[in-house]
Image (tube, rainbow, N blue to C red; front, top):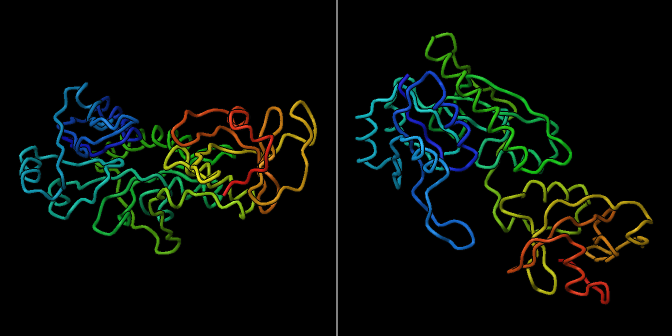
Length: 317
C-alpha cells in the first residue's frame, strides 16, 4: 500500500523505521511543526522529522491538519492508508476521508481502557499490572474507533513511563506493520470496541506532578514513576523546586548508611551517610536522584551534603 505516516516524538520513530523496512511504500510523513526544545530552547525538528529527512522522505508540517494547503497536498499524494503513532493533533473528518483504508492509529493501552493523551502514565499511576498497545481506525470520537489488533505488556514494579513506553513503541511498531499487511490482503477486519470498561487518560501537567507527602508511600512511588521522564515529579524545599526520580523503600534499619530513625513526620527529611529518607503517610521512602532548580541531576545523598541538610531540620512540601 501507499502510505503517509503521521507521528512526532521519539516514541513514534520505531513505527517509522518499521514502515521504511516494510513491503509498503512510504510516500510522506506528517509531523508537528518545528518547536523549541532542550535546555537552550533552540528550535528543532521533531524526532520523526529528523528521521524522515535522513531517509529522504517528504515531510509535511501543517500548523493544523485541517489547513486547506495540507489537505490538497495529501489528496495529491493519494495514500491508501495513513498509519499514526503519537502525532499530537486531532485529525479532522476532511483528512480522515482521504485515504481509502482510513487512518490507523497505534495507541499505548488496551482499549477501551485509558483513552487519551497519557495512557502509559495513567496505567502506572493507577497501579495496573498489565497494559499493552492497540491498533484501531481513527474516528471523530477520541480513541473510540474499531480495533484491528492488540498486544499486552506486563508493567514491572520499577517501570517508569519512559521505560514502559520504550518497550511498547518497539512492539507496537511490529504490530502496526502486521496490521497494514492484513488490511492490504483483506484478511484483517476491525471490530468495534466494547462499550464497558472505558477509562480516560488526560495529559498530566506539571501541576499534577507535585508530590503530596500526605499520600501513602506506594501512591507517591507510582506518581513519580508515572511522571518520569515527563513532566517530572517535583516537590519544594525552602520554597525552591526539587525534581525527583523514582524512590524506593529504605534499605533496612542499619548498615553503612547509618541507623534509620522512625517514624518520620510527613515530608520530614532524614539524611544519613549514603542516603536520604522522607516521611509519608505510611512508611518512609528513600530518595533516588534529585535535581534542585537550576542545578544538575545528582544522587540524593550528594544533594543533601551540598545543602548541609544533615545539620538542620528540613521538610519537603
